[in-house]
Structures are given as C-alpha cells and as structure tokens.
Image (cartoon, rainbow, N blue to C red):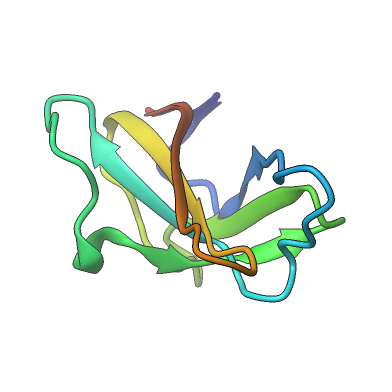
Length: 99
C-alpha cells in the first residue's frame, strides 16, 4: 500500500483468528517500523486500533487527527491481538510506503 504523507486515513490489516476463537473482545494493536529497523516492536511502538467487521484491524494515521503521523519512507506493519487463552499473537502483516 502507498499513502501520501498528507493523507489522513485508516490503514486496514486483515487478521485471521485461530479456528473457533472470537478475537474482537480486546482491541487490536498496530505498529509501524521503518524497514531499516530489523527489531521487533517494543511497547512504545504499539498503537491501539479498532476492529472493522471483526476480521480487519484498523488504525487512523495521518496529520489530521491520526493516531500517528508517519514521515516519508517504507514501513513494516505489525498487528497484535490477544485472543482468549494463553496466546498473545504478533504478526508481521505487510509493508506500507509513505510518499
């Protein structure tokens, strides 16, 4: 996905839940790390998102009221969700370019 830095819009991340598990009981978290940063997200990297239709995590980004504003560059997008039980799932979900 490619987004201009001046745009304020939701980034949608498809999420596949473990079979038979409702993941919408807790909000998803999303992290955007520059591709040059090969580390995993740390606590301060995570932003709390919302669920869109129960299968997509989303977060509003951009300069007009977004949860964060990203500078021009390429980012790895992570999603984290905490289904009932012992799992706390973190996945690299894709890449985002900001122009």
